Length: 216
Image (cartoon, rainbow, N blue to C red; front, side):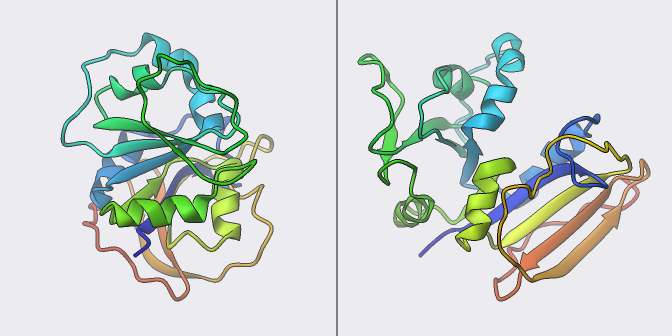
């Protein structure tokens, strides 16, 4: 059975994913509500954080943490071992396609190959489900999230909306080309003005998660 998929993003009021100071502490505290088995991230998101990862502490893999799965059809991310040791994830799984460039012979990162020139996201979810994965949290916007929405692979959308307008920069739904009906499941506003909007895709079940107090 395919895992339940939650897409979580921090955005501005006008939908931008960059150009403002996001409340990362609240974002990742809320991410723990779902207790995901797998965190799914695209190469673009990781490359944008490469300099921060380079200087971050490395306490080692967190045994009880989720698995980090990285969609990287063109093999642009070369610091997967460093990501594993950041203390958030239990391990890293590289997701490649048949045409992904050759990897280093001494690479110790497990990999899963699907699709021809792009990673087959539907097949990835099916394979993860067969391995016992129940919930996947997508921590990416852009092309990866757009592709997943276009393929009907997202069950739930969580937006942490910040009270700011950027007027420029990439929008979280730039790559989405279809039409999608959403059902509002929850709204919470915090003292800082940040608002949490939680939607389920019409026809999809809502994964039970704890809520956080509006005054937090």
